[in-house]
Image 1 (cartoon, one colour):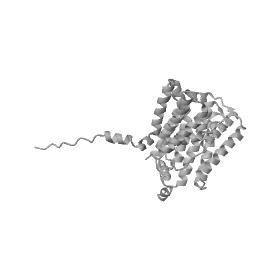
Image 2 (image 1 turned 90 degrees about the vertical axis):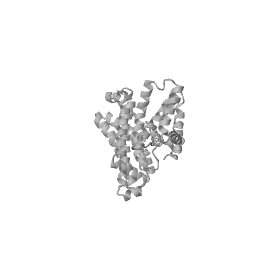
Image 3 (image 1 turned 90 degrees about the horizontal axis):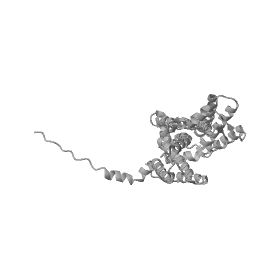
Image 4 (image 1 turned 45 degrees about the vertical axis):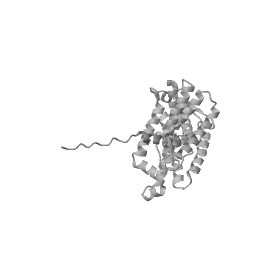
Length: 327
């Protein structure tokens, strides 16, 4: 008669789960999601219209540009760099779009010109950093000023009205709760995730950010990787410029030039290491939503807009503190 082996029951999971919840690294990795849920609960309790259909739709539309810019910033920070010019390049691209539109160009060439403007600054930034061996902080800070100056010169310091039924529909309509602009941002996030985690290019990006010397020793051209990531950031800034024009119906040389801080905050809050080598795409998307919800919620409960930059600054500092606990 064959003896029956009785296997020991699996060890209880509760202690391990409890230990994990006590681990600061766990909360640091999920900070963006936890923050989003927490802010939603707080603002909904303060104002019952916060989770209304119209307000949620407004939040998603408002978050689209920040999501796209943050994805571009994710690529640069994943290599251990940073792009301080994204907001100014976006504004310059929007001004290029508005200038071309007022010259009588049709929409496709206007869009191509805006993306080309972002592409130009991305390639210049990447080339100066990778080939010129100039610190990314210095190069992109210079580009920030250059793009702002070019925007003022091209626009002569004045906003240009852009009346386009197509752009109006694109910025105000969508599928149910989700506007076309937010769906575009989600599509870009999906493509970015695939590129970053399912292609050789993404592996090289993370390797270059983890250790440039080790990556070079294995045959990876870190210079090409840096040029590529800054080009991606520039192109996405150019695309964001188009969305900015579509959203406000005009191009202005003074529009949203302070959004760079928000992109860094979204990326850090989303779990991307400022030291490079560690990245995620869904994290910065959630981080961008957190910042948008924060601004929207503060406005809805009647807090002065003067306090909003302060709140973003606090989020940045908290995100930086949480980085210490990330695995």
